[in-house]
Amino acid sequence: MVEWTDQERTLIANIFANLDYEDIVKPDVSCHHSLCLRCLIVYPWTQRYFGGFGNLYNADAIMNNPMISAHGVKILHGLDRAVKNMDDIKNAYATLSELHSEKLHVDPDNFRLLSDCLSIVIASKMGYDFTPDLQAAWQKFLTVVVFALGRQYH
Image 1 (cartoon, rainbow, N blue to C red):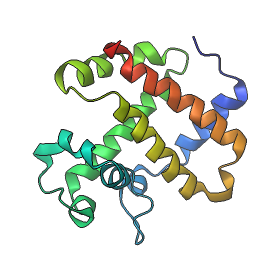
Image 2: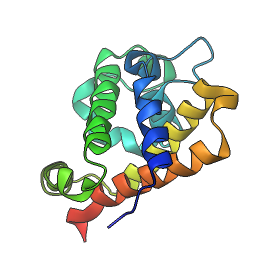
Image 3: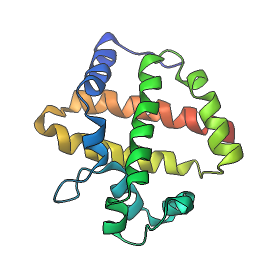
């Protein structure tokens, strides 16, 4: 079981309280801030799970794909579940872990790749407010989420 300090809980809750999910998934002019765009371009093999999402052949196609943006928002709302269940993320994500393992057959390493992309996007959005203490709490949180999502695979 993971132990959370009051400071870590507050830092994580504050990140989510100040996130505009639509803003996180839609690219800005430089395309630096889009969660799904970054993941699907940096790790192109992850595109194979989105065959039903239409044209994903290049950055422009991914950037302008409303299904990709909608999935990014869905992912962020899924993280809300972890924030609300910080003392039992493993059980809160049991169904999602089973879905991704048994039905979708997602490589569990992709959860870590997505969490890395999310960290970059959050850090770029927050700028200097993304302090080392905040990053430490954030990385701890995402590590627990990634472990919980991959639990069904073990």
